[in-house]
Amino acid sequence: CGVFGVIGVTDAANFVALGLHALQHRGQEAGGIVTHAPDVGFQSVRRFGYVRDNFTDPETMAMLPGQLGIGHVRYSTAGSKGQTAIRDVQPFFGEFAMGGAAIAHNGNITNANALRRELIERGSIFQSSSDSECIIHLMARSLQKTIPDRMEDALRRVEGAFSIVAMTRTKLIGVRDPLGVRPLVLGRIGDGWALSSETCALDIIGAEFIREIEPGEMIVITDKGIESTYPFRPKRPRFCIFEHVYFSRPDSILGGRSVYETREAIGRELAKEAPVEADLVCPVPDSGTPAAIGFSLESGIPYAMGIIRNQYMGRTFIEPTEQIRNMGVRLKLNVNRALIRGKRVILVDDSVVRGTTSRKIKEMILDAGAREVHFRIASPPTAWPCFYGVDTPQREKLLAATMSEEEMRDHLQVDSLRFISLDGLYRAVGESRGRDASAPQYCDACFSGEYPVEPADMVEQGFRP
Ligand code: 5GP
Ligand code: SF4
Ligand code: MG
Image (tube, rainbow, N blue to C red; front, side, top):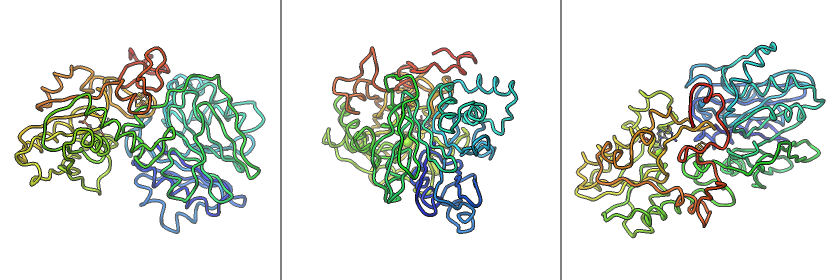
């Protein structure tokens, strides 16, 4: 998901809509905006579909007055799937002592089931099936005297990944879980401030990127300025390494470095680790593009757009049902036949998850007359599900969970298949000595199976890490 908020600007909702538009790659199912203005209080609009279709017409935007607003773009990792329940669309808003609050959450709460059971037993009335709603109820029940204090109170009970943008009548609040699994950044716009999942959304509104919110940090912004605190027991940060590989936009800055440069470095590393003789390096667009460029630069094999992407389709993996996803490949990608015929082709993609996309692409490439197809993947085999806010399928559906690399190659029927090593990936993201096995610098659970926070709800349902 993507979260965004601004304070201290005229017509905040317009800025939030633009910010969310720039974060649309993080969630395409639905979006919502909440604003506050002294005369009308909190206002909220939540809808299915793209930001550009829902938050551009003057009538809608007129329903969201004020100088303070937050927003969310959703893709379901918990709660209902797809565009089925508008009640699961964020931001969530609740009125309680001190006027209430609205929150937008990116990540996944790993003990949400347990918290929900407890809250329901104590009388909370849930409106949604979303894990994030727990936070509002915990806040409503807290005995603390200010909303930021109540939020701290609530979040101390929450486990898992959260990057949150929240607001009260007068405050914009940003907070990251102690591991800092999901990103969150601070920007300056005129006399106001912005909080965003990624820096690309600061660019679109002309805000200056100030800094990242630190893992475990909470900042409270009012018209008097910013207050920063560290309310949680400190832990060694474990940022999601997959944000570098796939999730974030290539024009965003993560950890002081452009995501594009990191992906190019991943491609270079991959070319060093798994070279192969071929005529062309082609990305599987768009997610494989920067890595393919890096692969080409390192290997000297020409880069070519052998597969063309229809720009009017969304991201495949964000389509929530298997059926839509299966159709999606052909609707979205087509082979550039004239280029491919008779060639030995290296295809670079970011990840192999179920293997359905990869298999279809390989068939399309062979149909177009390619002589050889070599897959090079910019992440290690995805063998474990993510419980921290990326929607990987159940373990059984992950190709790498049941097959060795050679079996996967056989299954995809390609001439060769190689993944970047975990150490190689760490080097590419800037850890020159690779992965520190005794204290890994990132979360890499979907590749390693080492979960930095126990996925309690899943363990309760029988999952064994
Ligand atoms: P596959 O070949 O595994 O079906 O799909 C791999 C491609 O689709 C990659 O380009 C990746 O960007 C995307 N993808 C498909 N499904 C998922 C998924 O569930 N999770 C993630 N992280 N990426 C996926
Ligand atoms: Fe990121 Fe994978 Fe960890 Fe999920 S499990 S937070 S996708 S590295
Ligand atoms: Mg892709």
